[in-house]
Every structure is written in structure tokens, then in C-alpha cells.
Image (cartoon, rainbow, N blue to C red; front, side):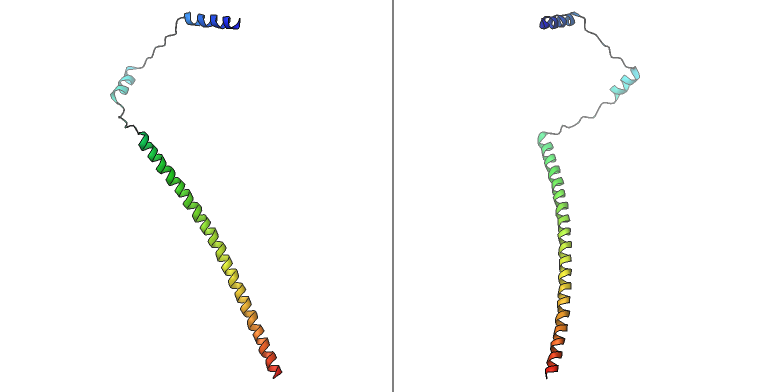
Length: 113
């Protein structure tokens, strides 16, 4: 039943006259559009477009990797520098401790003699 209603509605739409629309423009605008033709564009082929995209993507990815590597290098370099300074402080403390210990040992040896 529903299909009959829909088919009858479709037939009724087909019988009606189509609406005709006209296009109009002013003669000055029409002459201006016709007087200045568009420049011919060279189409970009699939090969050239693909190569351009590949090189652009490779360049961007390489730049991102370079930036990441530089940041990691700076961070590891700072940590290594901090460790070197900490080691240097520990060696300085140990050398002063050994110097005082040697002085005490010499003082004990002098007392024994």
C-alpha cells in the first residue's frame, strides 16, 4: 500500500513541468569577465605531486627527529655535567679527608718516637 502511494507521488512529480531558471548579468560585467581570460595552469602530475609530498614529509620528519635528538642531547649533557661536578666534589672531599688523616698519622708517629 505504501509503495503505491510513493509510486503515485513519483509519477505526479514527473508529470509536472520542470522549473526553468534563467541566468542574467549586466553587459559590463559580462564583457569584463570575457576580456580577462584566466592563465593556463600546468597540471601537477601524480609523479611530481607524489615526489613533492614525499620530500616535504621526509623533510618535516627529519626536522622533528633532529629537534628531538638535540633536546635529548642537551638533557643528557646536563645530567652528565651534574654528575661530573658531583664526582669532582666527592674527590675533593676525599682528598681533604686523606690529607687530614695523613696529618693525624704523622702526629701519632711523632708521639711514638
